[in-house]
Image 1 (cartoon, rainbow, N blue to C red):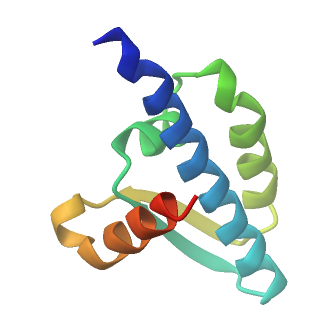
Image 2: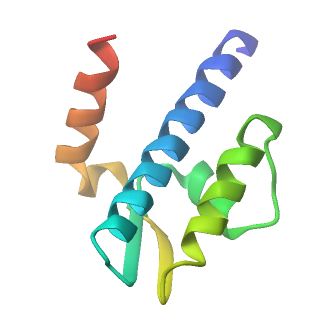
Image 3: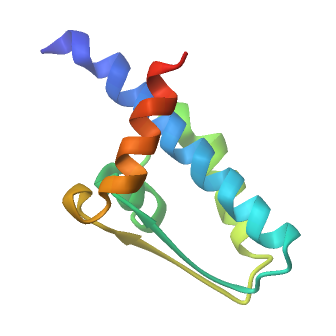
Length: 97
């Protein structure tokens, strides 16, 4: 329903911020080549495609700028069933707040 839309956007923002933080951490550790996997198909599509969500434009831009500091970076979708540990940790963190 229409009431789920704000929650979807909020989840995408959280995923994007987590990815941005991970890229920053990789750069600070002097990692030059990075493969970023996410079970958020929407986020991967936003980063790799030509689609846009206004609430995420600044974060996606930041990810793009940070990515240029690396020799190589790729973004890959991984199904949630193949990523159960990370999914559980994310849900636990979400419910703590």
